[in-house]
Length: 305
Image (cartoon, rainbow, N blue to C red; front, side, top):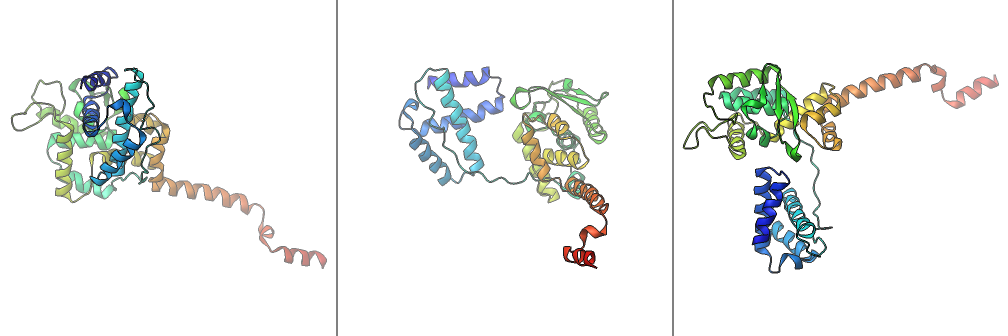
């Protein structure tokens, strides 16, 4: 369909990442292939039927929501840029999502995991997620010239939402990165490269990185994903009393509400804040003296004597 090709070009004009374009086109392709009517004639009832189909296929609610988002944007394109007169059929079509807490690793789990990651490239990749909060897509797209080890900075270009930001290298992250760079002999621009097979020397893919963390998860018996390393970084910083807006900037969150989700898992900070606040409360109540806490009946009786 020509309209699908035009939509692909529209996504690229919006500076969407190649990963996003590929996912959206895959979702829209499956959807339009299922349709029995032209896109301009799709109704909310059709969308409800498509959601039922995805549920029967065993897709999780979060995955279905991603499908609906991609399809909604496709219809927005048809209305706004193709000039098709219709109401967006995805409006008010949704599926209720559970809201689990972001899972993070405990300190002992981090030690167990990194004890089995001895490959310099892999150790550097996952250390950047743990200490810098980088997304897996951001790690896959890193270039050599984005690294400034002397100033302990990494420039993240065109992150999620097309945003640029600067993150900072902890001492252990810099050590891991420098150890990898000493062994890396390629002149390729990409930082992390495939090390074996016919693709040797090419930038490692997102899926390639995910397969490596899955390998180390099995080897260490620590249940972990790339994104959990990012969650762990945010939780650790919050427990160390870093400001929420600072964490927001480091993670590249567009909304502070996204960062606030980490407050729900930062148990140490909640505990410290509680004891600090309750100490102030107790000091304020104690200055009123013991008599303020005596039963009113006793005070009345003493006044009558």
